[in-house]
Figure 1 (cartoon, one colour):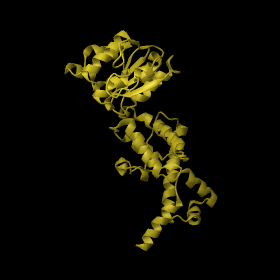
Figure 2 (figure 1 turned 90 degrees about the vertical axis):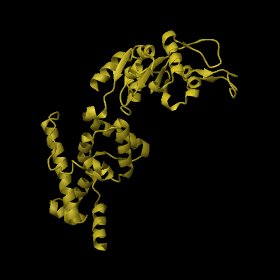
Figure 3 (figure 1 turned 90 degrees about the horizontal axis):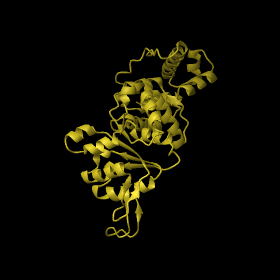
Length: 322
């Protein structure tokens, strides 16, 4: 991703057309916004068009607008997405889905920098930066006759491939922190972090749905969480099939020795507290005596690691009732 960001920095200030390639959910829309935000057009509109979500009969009028009387129901002029993106950026997501007719019209915009509204006669200058994205191999589509080669060459002046989340698992801790901050603002909660066991499990998952899937998983766990830490019990248990045996903390030589010690200590403290609280069914006094610390110190540690005494009490009550 550092290489990707370097390319973004290089191309953003230019007017060059950019083609973003990558699987569904890798974050092509986010990269498109990043390019716009670092361009000379950053103060103008960024218009995101989901080409795949538009019916073929509406694509032309949505992109280029229409004049009054152009067709039945056209009671007044409507501005299209290219109109709204003037002097700014238009992002054509899933460009591989547009019809052959629309491919020809889009080619005209890229070649001649003009377009016409439906029912209009006067050409309109298109002062628009175009960024397109595809989750399909456009070269293969060209080979199969499903996508125009001349349009492909116009779009791929600066191709930029976004790696899948599986290829950049080292980014997952940062993504988790980012999403927690985002959901804190959205849901007005104060979750601080994710349990190290959760982070490790998410890094080992293959993520076929990429960042979009990660976002959904984190949001679900966030909604269920009642403590200040995202805990394993609020995630699908299949994530922990191979990570339940976690007697060792994975060593990451990218960290300093001090950071490794701190992470190891945090992990061991949390596991110790869970076992002590389980043994005493959530009784703070007894747990603190076993741990050799004050009840106040125990409360602070439980809060730090998102451990709720009520969960151990409820488990004990269930056993008694049974």
